Image 1 (tube, rainbow, N blue to C red):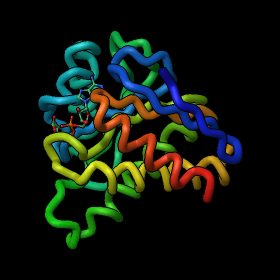
Image 2: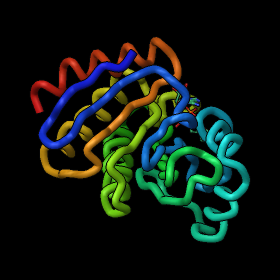
Image 3: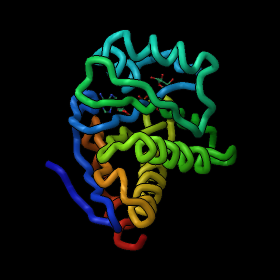
Length: 183
Ligand code: APR
């Protein structure tokens, strides 16, 4: 079941699911700075999308991508057109610029989506797995960025958050309820 909010020009949709199966223009990968692949959502995207994605990122971004930013590739065998490889921060207590980096990584994905004519984008809970970011705080940041984006930009007009587990889903729904009415 999806929950939907409208903010400015954008529809923000939150639901539980597997991001690799989303029929959107761009899906976001929770990658690492070397773009080396991994477990979690990164592993799922490369498994489902096939080797073309890694071949492209190796060729285009041999030095990887800094924390707090993102790069774009094709999506191989996935239903999406693009994968945005987003490097979120590792949680290290909160005093090391984590919030700024988590904000900028969401922002950068939305910019890449807009600049590549994407109408729809799906985010996972960046940094909320192996990278250990407190989920309630991460959800608040994700909703702040998405809400502001919708006020100021016309595309992408559909911003989805696709959460793998019900507890993460609940945190994102709570954050949306608190934040999206007030942006
Ligand atoms: N669809 C949606 N969400 C998923 C999926 C999936 N198929 N698989 C896992 N998730 C969820 C996790 O449950 C978690 O809530 O994505 C969230 C992010 O978790 P991670 O994938 O561990 O990402 P992150 O915390 O940003 O850590 C990134 O992990 O896999 C490595 O290479 C990656 O080093 C990088 C690090």
